[in-house]
Structures are given as structure tokens and as C-alpha cells.
Image (cartoon, rainbow, N blue to C red; front, side, top):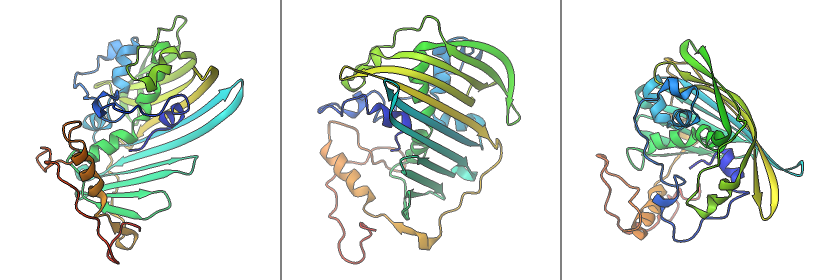
Length: 324
């Protein structure tokens, strides 16, 4: 799973994962929360940060259901400073293009020289870490391709979640993005920011005492369904770790383009692709070891869980692709 720049930086302020915490109790960090299908109240979203939160928390699959074919680009930069001096600086960029019949091509890169590219076409996933070869396999379950899209799109929701308690909104009327009618919302720092909500997890307790010290931006929501068409946010979040005060400066830009236009999505050339028969083995091990603790990841074609069983022995010899 790709972690957005925001989550990578927040690791600076948070502890490691506590032992004994089940996936479902990790506040959406491992198991994504179920999204409501309730329509976004647009007239409310232009003035109420809570309703705008619902709009900016929509998953990629929910946006796809509204917009159909399109391309979305999301870029972030996160700079952490202590006493005005940079501690870390990380930027990233994600592009997701939708093709015919549910296919897509997604690319993620960041300034730390990490990247990931995913193609889903004709029922097959092609996965490529940056600078490596493509790995081909079938999805582990019917939901995996959509989950990959959701993960790669997640920076918008994660960034807004940090800023929301300090936001004040102003309705700026009609706007258009790629020929599609929208509603423009100006975002600025509220003169009376709300107290951040309580956090259940020890890893996220630092967020309860964060301060939103600066915030400005523009959000354009679809005039019919309320899904985000364009997002520009610039803000600063203050937080404390080990009795040291830090400022996290975040910039996010997201734009939708090519609405109604199918991207050309093709599988990689066979000579650039290796099969990954071992990919499911670690999933089998995880499901077998976590019986009764967490639901199995492997699914049958109808979506029902596969009964956990011990993983098959790893393949050996010259035919194995495990080290390619």
C-alpha cells in the first residue's frame, strides 16, 4: 500500500505501531472505513467544514462512479521545520488515468526516489516498483484494483483531515473544471479554530494537540454530485514531539482533466514482465496466522472469504521468479 507524503511525514511525529492492535481498530490505517453513499449536500459543503470533509473524503471509486472516464493528478509537498530550520522535505506526485472496461494506469513518484506504477487491464494487475521490472498477477480479490486506486488517491482526504478543525469556508459561486460545472469554495484560517477531535490510537494522540497555524486554498466541487474537481490547499500544522515543537508546512494540488476521455491502457511488453507466483504466499500466511483475529484478505470470485490454510512451500530452482 502506498503511503502518501503526509503519512510518511507524520511518522516523524508518531510512534510505531503498538502491539496487539487489530487491523479494524487502527482507525482506517489498515482497513479502510466503509464509505457512506449519502449524497453530498452542496449548499452545506460550501460553508460547513464537516460537510466539505465528507466530500473530500470520498474514495476514488466513488469519484469514478460519478465522473466516469477521467484523469486525476495529485501533488503534495510537506516540509517539517524546527525553530525555522528544515528537518525534512518530501514532495510527491500521483496520476491516475481511467481506461475502458474498468482498466486504469496509475503512477506515484516522490522526491525520496521511491515510486510505484500500476496497470490494471483485462483482469490482470501489473505492478512495478520504481526502476524495477513489471510483475504480473491476478488480483488477490475482486476489490483489490479499486483499493489500489483508493490508496493512491488518499492524499486529499489525509491532508484535509489535518486542516479541517481550523477551516473557514466562503461560497464563491459557479466555476468550471474541464467543461464540467462546479461550485467554488474559498478556504482560509478560521479566527476561532475548533479543538481537534479525540484520537483512539496512541500513535495519533499527537494530533489532539496540533494547531492549525496557517491555511488558505480553493476547492471546486462538482455542481451535481459534490465530488472534488479541483483542490488547492496550503497550510501549516504545529505539533509537539519529545517536548520539541515542529511546524509541518503542507501544500496540496489536485486537478481532474480529460472527463469523458478514455486513456489508452495497455499491458507492458512481455519481455519487461515477470510472473509473481509467490505473491499470494505471504497473504496465505497472514490469513492462516490471523484466523479469528482479522478477516482473511483472500477472496473468492464472488467476494466470499477463502478459508485460511497454510501457505504452500516456496518454489525453488531455476524456474523461481522470487528473486527477480
